[in-house]
Image 1 (cartoon, rainbow, N blue to C red):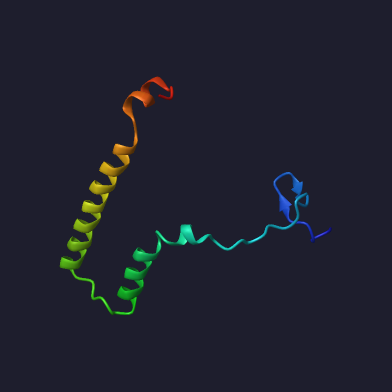
Image 2 (tube, rainbow, N blue to C red):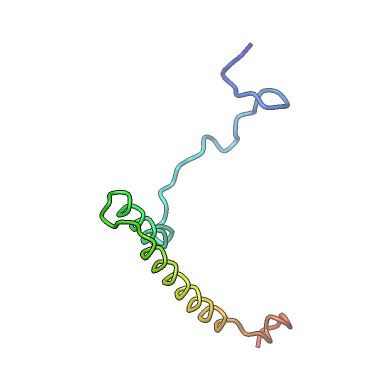
Length: 89
């Protein structure tokens, strides 16, 4: 039996016509939003920031405020009448 091709439920898998998958580096715009939470987690892992209930409540409050402000900003960008009729003005 040929063991070079991976098996699937229907038999041996056929090779991809496009070749092997490539790994592209992420764009800088995709990494930017994830940086602040990762930085906070990293600082907590290295005990630079000590996780306490007060810190958790403070971060939760900051997220709540950011969510409310973001919601208002995004809601202001949409024109309700255009969304209902589907036409451009």
